[in-house]
Length: 315
Length: 273
Image (cartoon, rainbow over all chains, first blue to last red; front, top):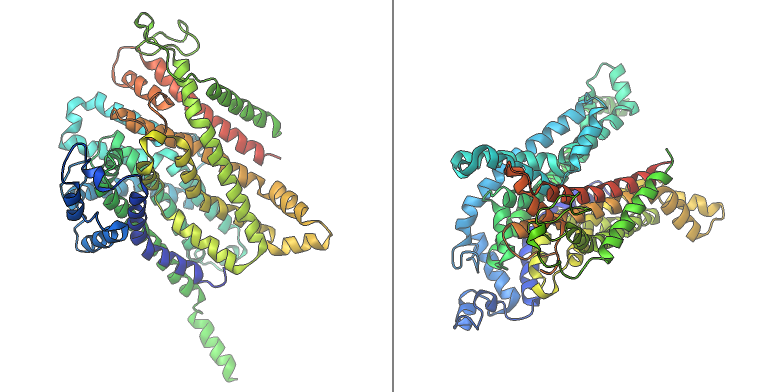
């Protein structure tokens, strides 16, 4: 990398482009499929008026026309209608219930990951525990989600679908997200390695000799890597929500996306995929901002040094 | 511990899975209700399903669905990680920036979401795991390239190449032997093995989600069964007290575990000295 700001700049550019690129690519791909996209909604052998429907749903002007109209609507909060899943239903109504559920699931799923990061950073996790967590982290999310679903069904039966049951499903889903596919164990190992490596640096040992705080000295150097790791973990959890929501029957964006995919309902797939892209873009932008702030902080000379420099210049 | 015993076990497991896949029947045998839900001892090696069909056929078809695409994806990621490591040794800032930009954009995509979008676009007549596995490989590539580039960086990057050139080594010896074989090997093998495991998990997840909703899987034609079918058939054993389908669940989990074990041993063998 040529300059310290190149990587944050690339991240910011990617963050800005991602939410625009995802629907654009899907729109292009819809037209790359064999046949007319309007026939997905209204197959000519089953219903008449395909041409009128195509005009009404902006499918008659090619992919760019469809994309531009969709983006303009999305900016106003109108994400179009479902093509097949709940034909004609506005997708924003589906998203209004799905997004908060997924957000809660994701936030709760992050709790074990953050705990693993804190434990790894403290360096107080016994060595013998590492392999146990690693072994546990090998379990795929679908298997762990199945076990969780079975446990809920056994314990609560039909009651696992009432309001309290849904809360328990979200809690179980969060545990699955936070533990499966190495989310917990890899965070523990990754953050642990990061901090233990840094503790061995000479400047940290000098800081200890000077009676300064170790963490305060290490954090500016570690924060970019730490934020990068946490972004990767969060993205992993975001991907995992699809499996967890479907297996545990949680009505979130992942479940919506899965059902839209099964039925080739691009009216649902585009907004759901864009919602995930927006979340990913926010994480990218956050990482870029943190990197810039840390870089500026590190490059800023301490006040005492500036005073000393000034004094040196005057003499 | 030397690297050979784990490497041999990993290769043996892998070859066995390949052989199982190659011998897989096109269709499952006809049902035979007189032999339904037999255990391992009564219908070796894995027992039968609720229709009396041997689970061995499920296992073989599952291997056929998953092994080849997962291997191709693993190899693709391995090659991309080699490329990432070598590009860092070139020491060109513009190349580094281009690789970083590729990594930021592709690495920022939630993988499962991309897979589902790609799955939507595959015509039902051409369903298979390979396009999804290759997509997964592309999504895994930035991480693999980044890690290999970090190894090359620690090695000295372009200065390391210059130093070896000064010793009179040829380009092929420097890049293929000193950099790839001696230094990048653990990262390349680990990334390839991890991708192989992840593609197996991906197939399992996609097929299970489809089977659970009585839909066709995106990863294979309806005539084939995957290991996810074993999990689905064995699931009642978790929620009902009566014994019957537990052996099916164990068979499914056993083969998923086998793939994980093979990948872990391969990684260990590449790392051991």
